[in-house]
Amino acid sequence: MTRVAAIDCGTNSIRLLVADVNPGTGELVDLDRRMTIVRLGQGVDKTGRLAPEALERTFAACRDYAAIIKELGAERLRFVATSASRDASNRDDFVRGVMDILGVEPEVISGDEEAALSFTGATRELTGRDDLARPYLVVDIGGGSTEFVVGDDAVRAGRSVNIGCVRMTERHLVRDGKVTDPPAPEQIAAMRADIEAALDLAGETVPLREARTLVGLAGSVTTVSAIAQNLPEYDTDAIHHSRVPYDRVREITESLLRSTHAERAAIPSMHPGRVDVIGAGALVLLSIMERVGASEVVVSEHDILDGIAFKAAEDTGAGGEQGA
Image 1 (cartoon, helix red, strand yellow):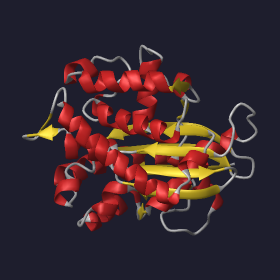
Image 2 (cartoon, rainbow, N blue to C red; image 1 turned 30 degrees about the horizontal axis):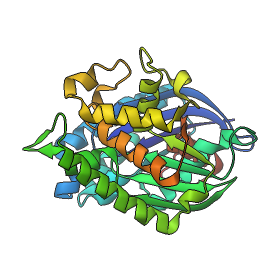
Image 3 (spheres, rainbow, N blue to C red; image 1 turned 180 degrees about the vertical axis):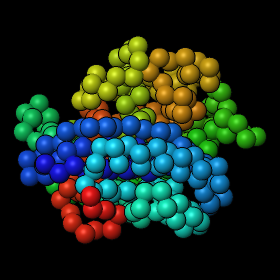
Image 4 (cartoon, rainbow, N blue to C red; image 1 turned 120 degrees about the vertical axis):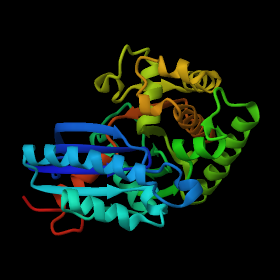
């Protein structure tokens, strides 16, 4: 087993996994797994730049993570940055800050690389299950983008499109600098049209309707699962590999898009950082299920973060890693 640290820095959150990994057997044992909402992508869709306050929130989380990585003695560290830092004109400021704190250069990966890592993390432990037909369609609904990957034991096709929950919220649900609560019907219609256009784009590369099992990743999907189960608090064990029927996803999405900030915040399993963006994230999930004709979504807590950890254990000497 190799002890590795993996960091996934997205548009809405930054997450850490420290784990002992055996890439040969697919075994991964968590030592520490945590998430911090930092909103690195705040305003990027509009300004094209990472905001100073968003950078500082992210660097503060990196300092916390550096202490945990040192304490647990990870042999390798891999830091992957996704949608927001791909799109920002000042991403060099982000790279320098991360290097100063963690000693590694963040890999600003492409959407295709992001999709492949998500697929590996989500499906490696599903191999051999008779109740889940293949091929899988893995969808990772992030803050700035959503990744689509179809595959069996390996990736067949993947595509990243810009319909993340933060991006959709900022683009369609904000008026006069504030999120509309609840959004007007025309705002929802405009967001839905944007999502459908992105699904058309994804479908040019990924055979969406060939999938037999839809696997959903990331906070929007796991939060919908928590709501569907009426959990008294967010419970990773209850959420991981739960199965949420289409009708329940539709019901929850419609409810979220009718609700106010206070009503969403009062949901016991709702992370405070997701209150403003969960309606958009749920609508992305619902739209995907309708497009592919999925009767349910299989929810996974294992995603790109686990894929990064497997890759860190497998590779030697790649950028974004460090020795013990």
